[in-house]
Length: 342
Image (cartoon, rainbow, N blue to C red; front, top):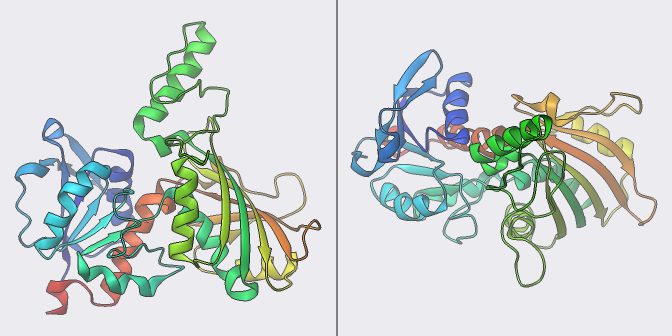
C-alpha cells in the first residue's frame, strides 16, 4: 500500500525537483498531488512520464493525505504547515520557518536519523539550509572519528539557491553584457554575471548574514552544539551546485589518508581526490547527482589537528528536494506514517 503525497510549491525549482526525485527513487505513492497558489492553478508539471495539473492550496482537502513536501517559502509554511500537520498529515518543510523550533526535528538522514522520532509534536520535520545539508554529511564521519572542535567554511553558492528569479537574472545579465545592453539588478544586490557577491540573506547586528548564521545554528542542532563554526557565504555566477571550502580543527589527530578512506565508506558521499589536473569535482559535474562530493582533502599544518577539504553538491537535490524525500523514506522505513502504522 502506497501513500497519498502532496507537493506544495510544485511550480518552483525545488518543487519540480521533488516530483522528479519521487519518481526516480520509486517512492511508493498511490497518488501524487501538485499544489501551488491560486494564480498557478492549472499549471502543468511533470511527474515521471505523467503530467500533473496544479491544484489550489487554499481550497485543497487534506483528509486522507499522508505526506506533504512543502516548498513554498517561509510565510506559506508558517501559515499552512501547522494546519496540515493537525490533520495527521506529515509535513516535511524545505523553508527556514521551522528549523530552529525546538518542537520540530531538523534532519539529514545520513547524520541524525533518530531525530525524526520527534516529528509528532507538530507533525512537521524541517529540512536544513542547502549549504548546511551538504556540509554536515561530510562532517559527520570525521566528527565521529576525531571529534570536531571548530569549522571555518567559505561557500560558493549557485544562483538557483535564490530560486528561478536568480537563475533568470544571471542569464539576462550575461546576455546583456555580450550585446551591450544595460545591466538590470532585481534579485541580487549587485551584478551577479561575471562577479561574486559576499552577501546572502539579510545582515545581522554582528556583521554576519542570516545565511551564515543559519549554517552555524543548524550545524549545532544537527551534529553537535559544542562545535564552533564561522561561515562566509558567497553567491557565484553558477546556475546549479553549491561548493564549500572547509577548514576543520579536531580534538584528536587525523591524517588526510585516514579522512579520505573514511569518507569513501560513508553514506551519501563520493570522494574524487586525485592530486592532478581534473582530479577534483566542480559544480558542473555534480548537477543531477544524489551524492555529496568531497575533493582536495589535505592536512592543515597551521593547526595541531587540522584538515582542509572541498565539498560540492547539487543544491536543488541534496540541499533541498533529495533530503526531503530521504526523510520521507526514513519515516516510511520506520513505520511512522499514521495510516500505514494503523
